Length: 358
Image (cartoon, rainbow, N blue to C red; front, top):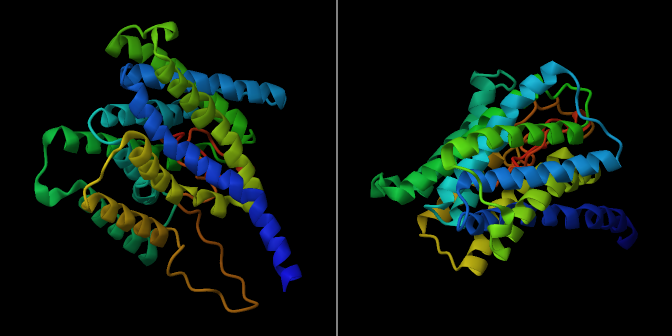
């Protein structure tokens, strides 16, 4: 018996540390966003973190002797993905966390798959709607209403902040199926596409941030705490997290690796409570559980019947955060995301999270 279990245990030990590390990195992104906006405008924070992530991935690209894409068509599509998968959602999470707790932002990040599905079905037509997916989507929508606490009425800064975080998740919902439709078939590596995506997002933010928020402050004028938060968000959460995610996909498989999405809000809540002494009202964690249950149902992790022994199940249409959560960079973030890369064709387009994922 022991001999039979050894291979599984060995496999588990090979990918579980990286899996948990990734969940912790993306879950902590919301904490570092909260710290960063204490001194920085959300646009400036996003600019600095994305720039740090860009430098990190370009260095990794150079070490691996990989190259950026050269085709204008690929860069054109990446411009759209960079805006909806990185620049806008990262900024919205920053604005949102000016009004809500970091742990609540982490919960909203988990709604991304529920937004991806209807857009993938109705707009991009990269998925088909099944009874299972419709049920999961309905459950998820109910969970969203519970998290919002709609029976308490709408309005106010806190409610507005939640809508901004939901808007960030909605941006990922556009970027993921768009990437799957127009970029996933590219011959370029996920690392190459992700580095290009971050490079474009940096350029976009470098233009928009000064126009909206004025010139960004010099890094030397920031406190050590904020500067460290920016570097962790960029180099680790937006840069190296992508490399860890690729490794997880290679070792554990895309489907298993994509389930990190379920742990990100858990880490976000734990870290927010321990580091910032944040508290949630009863309906927010309850709604989060309903959302996660809806996501699990829509992705077939709950309620799917097993195929009879010896009979192969027909392949499931690419799922929302399936192999490619790649775009999610699961997904990534914080505005995760997550996070922010494009998954390599070999690992499906499920990889890019929005870097926060956050």
